[in-house]
Length: 226
Image 1 (cartoon, rainbow, N blue to C red):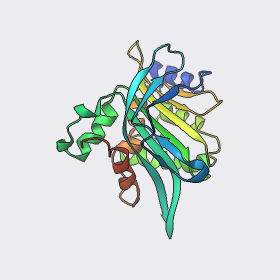
Image 2 (cartoon, rainbow, N blue to C red; image 1 turned 90 degrees about the vertical axis):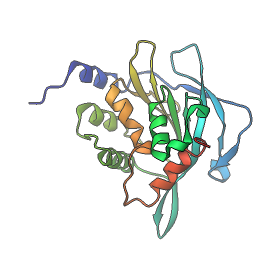
Image 3 (cartoon, rainbow, N blue to C red; image 1 turned 90 degrees about the horizontal axis):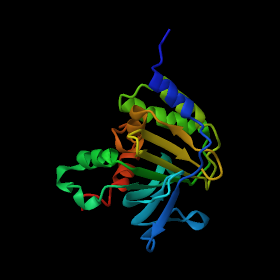
């Protein structure tokens, strides 16, 4: 019988908390929009993040944005993604190369990725894509905390749905990841390993069989290292 540590048990208990959404407030004018028509998504260079339950906001900086596509004869848009971090981009040395820039994003104390669905996807499709990305990065997809977290991502990913994924360290030094959708309880984990691993879906090693993920990854860091 596998023994689950107390910290892992507490992390599992935190999933499905009654906490609701954090607030991402744009500053200034939109730089551009991604998507099209009724699903045009504005992109801002700077935003303020107020995490649910907090009375103070934190300034965040754009790292990049783009559309994740899947190629089946032709490109099919899946979702628009926008990435923000709490580290000033001017402090990231782009001459160190792409991998260093990706690592700098994952190392940011606070980070946000906003996803807007551009097509209908199922929860199974999303969970499978996450698991594939975790495996490529050597993450154990059968670990109790990760399994519990992914099982909570069990709702339709309908066109137009907006998800906000927030990773941060709270005032007590606890590392937290939150998956939020409008009007619904946040899915939360306080497991530090999962919180660190979760950003590998977009900023870690990529599956070489997926011809589009590398390009999308480049879009998500296009504002860094200039």
